[in-house]
Picture 1 (tube, rainbow, N blue to C red):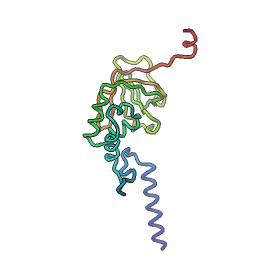
Picture 2: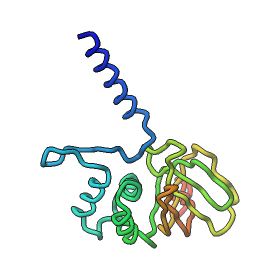
Picture 3: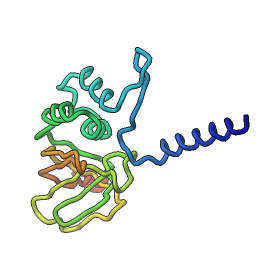
Picture 4: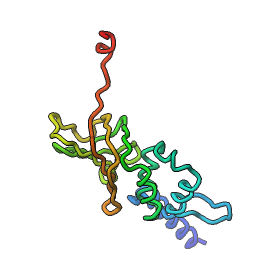
Length: 173
């Protein structure tokens, strides 16, 4: 009985640590299928695309965009990105992970603050006068231009920072 308890404890600790500390953004299994089995990440992404009109894909959260492009099959990811291509969007509260004069990488949602997981790369036509610091929250906009799966990256063009009007500016008008 003692050996069984040790094995059970070890197995539980192993699975908990894999779940909590895994860097894999596409876990092997997710929810329970209606048939009783488990779904892979690719199956979840495929199901979401099948159950949602392509006209609504542009309204997905940034976390959903990352998940489908990263974890879906190549065919599903390509079809999904084709619907997003050349669509402009704004990311309020993006966390800067890396910044250069003409390129800024951000985490679009708090769940991917891990510096190795930030997928959105914004290319600027002109060098930035002020380069944001890593960890800084910004409002940034851009147009979906391309993506790659290895390394995973979502490229945005026509990028700009959005500066909200200050209360004093609004009062003056």
